[in-house]
Image 1: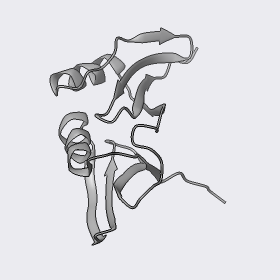
Image 2: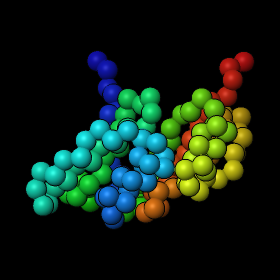
Image 3: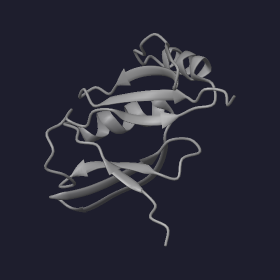
Image 4: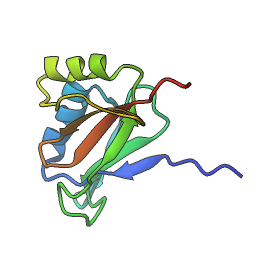
Length: 123
């Protein structure tokens, strides 16, 4: 039986600001934005090429905004991904090269942190 991680909550203070950041600046696809009621709004966004999405909104999680730390996505070329983020106004860190991959860190307006990873070439 497969177990597939499909949805990760990201706690934010301002849903519209966060949605704009992830879609317009980071480049995620907006899949759903549905207001069920005044107490429940479901916004699902997906990184390009990913099978796993993030969800934010009203009534989604009790986590404190900015408390989601260390989300990681794998990219083919971390330098190119960093250039894209910088061109879109995202403050991305320098490339950190480690034996297990090369990484670039960034955070959303609430302080939720992300890391882009380029896997090392296989020996």
